[in-house]
Image (cartoon, rainbow, N blue to C red; front, side, top):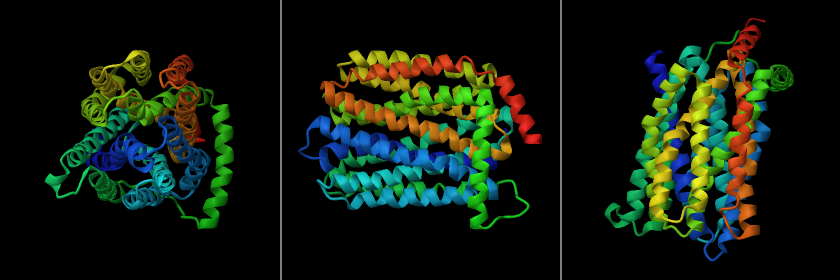
Length: 424
């Protein structure tokens, strides 16, 4: 494998920030928001509030990601921006501890800011992939990152779940206090395990580090150039459209699955168990998809994952027993890490390595722009129809369109054009 120290240090950031994705974003925040911060509100209304909260954070990243990526590439500043957004996410996540019952507005504000820290940091973390791996190892190294994320996020989440189920055993008053303490633990975990990537992963040196003013003006000029290049790079442009469609559906499922289960009448404890199943199945499955991508190609692996997702979503429309939710969680765990890691490694092959941050800025922009629509759409359709099941047809449609567009992505042409840009 590549330099193990660099790869492991890089992957530990996934271990670090996945605690936010599991304990906060997918796990406790939706439940706590509905039952504690939105106590007394109508179910459909609280779902709409949660969807809007997810969408607001994504909308900010839509606006910022390409600009930040272009600026970071100007001065080799990926790690500086990674540190800034990590600090932002850590502070805002820890601050959720202080939000009182019923103060859903404060909960939304801090959650949105923490989500911006999480998503903004991922722009620069993803871009550092090209600094730790060779092109032929992108699939495996990207999968190592996601597998670390599933394992690390799952370990802390399991501890947090135990705290919420048996709070007295941990010296806590009740489950509500256990959840609030969990937010602090996520913040500390995120901060601690971000240290390796900041210390041991090094960006390519630039001849001269520009000042702040030069960073911004140079970055904005480069952003315009990159936008023109993406329009001209047919393969990159086509892949981004495909990614936009299918990752919208993936992100919507990740962010809204617990809320969907609550709307069907499943107990919160059962949904938490399902999330843990997804995490621990996802750890080996992400590594398996990395090997699958290395042997048969990332594109083939993506088609397999999307196909499984479509089947799972159709099944979820008719689901009415909690044991079905457990099976669904295990199946999602098999493909969730695969579709994420293979998308990242596939895209990394199609772009020039010396412009990784700005190209990944567009990549993350489209991913988050999709997430602006997905969760909000589920909330709106649920409020209008009184049923959460009907909105899942939109998710199936997005997967189908994404797969259809992906079919026309020519990987070999994309790699050839990326190399031409690197040498020009």
